Length: 206
Length: 206
DNA sequence: TGTACATCAGTGAACGCGCGTTCACTGATGTAC
DNA sequence: TGTACATCAGTGAACGCGCGTTCACTGATGTAC
Figure 1: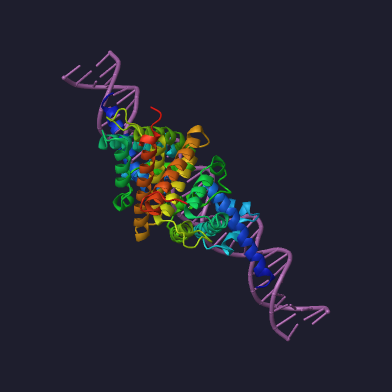
Figure 2: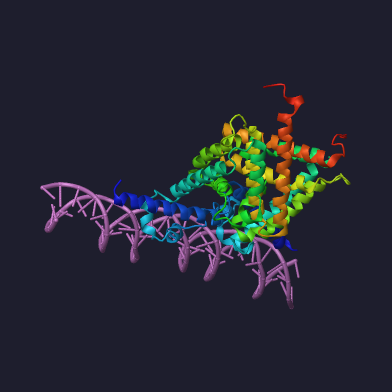
């Protein structure tokens, strides 16, 4: 790739990053192409040299941000056994600081919401979500220690539901309570699933 | 109220019902005022005799559908002790049939999504969500048997997160799996919370 | 009870605005010889 | 190494369309006397 090509790739990445922050904050319909390009320091017209359409961009953003976040998760909880891994993930995710910082926060809830209403993003989301739940199951560096699939998927669903509810409730005592209550709920679920899988009475099958 | 007033109230209710089905299916931005009125058998212009703006309608829809659903829930699980109440609610909610029938389904996930991005619906959602979680806590006809608040709020968050994920995943095996896994997760959480609350030895269960 | 006038729910065309997309253009980078 | 031409990333004005909202109008219902 020559100089021009490299520059273009850098620009594309800049658009993608700006768009990610924007879409996580105001959603796909809330962000205009012109806004996104402006935030990236460019003008509207150039957009279509990088993406086929606004929906294309949305798909690329879903892929980009979910991959980034999954790798971050794997790195952060590397080597932890599954109970500790999922319980820590829940605890760190369900905080007022994370609720209030959408632009830098986890893309999962935004991506899930878009996927419900924007078919163009659905297949990207589905693929990335499967990778995400595998990351929750297997972690990294903890071979032979997979979480039950129920625990991985359930934790993800709870995180997303809780975050959407907490954001819908704004910055309020009620919102803080949602974060605390859902964390307790998740911890209880993970204990229960660990007991079901781990207990001496239940270890009949290898 | 005279004949004209009665007729107008009936019409308003018809618009509200059509709008509820429409918004639950395609979201606020996906449904035009003209669509909504058309579905109700009316024309655009008349809309503003009933609602101040499209956002006003969205707020009214959130209030209307969430109230309706809460009363339905209270009626359906009347008199059940809290464990059975929440466990049944989860089981009935997390089904492929419910996932696929958005128009007639529960408004919670749609309302939560709108509240995140449309401030005009946020206060309506917050009020109704608080009523909903109280309904989950106390049920009806089961005095002296309140659920822990964690259980009520956590179950609601899990339901919403799971339904959004399942819908984002379309009608697929992966989507069915999300429903099953999250149900198992919720049942485990409720067992855990019941054990924690239920008795000092964590054994005495009726 | 009848008549004349007032009200008002609902109509449908028109308005205005925002936004996604297109396109002729510019100036810098790359290529041929 | 220099010169002439080709390419192409990014610009910014313009286009077209959809949608929320407005408004003059209609016909049925209500009211005064």
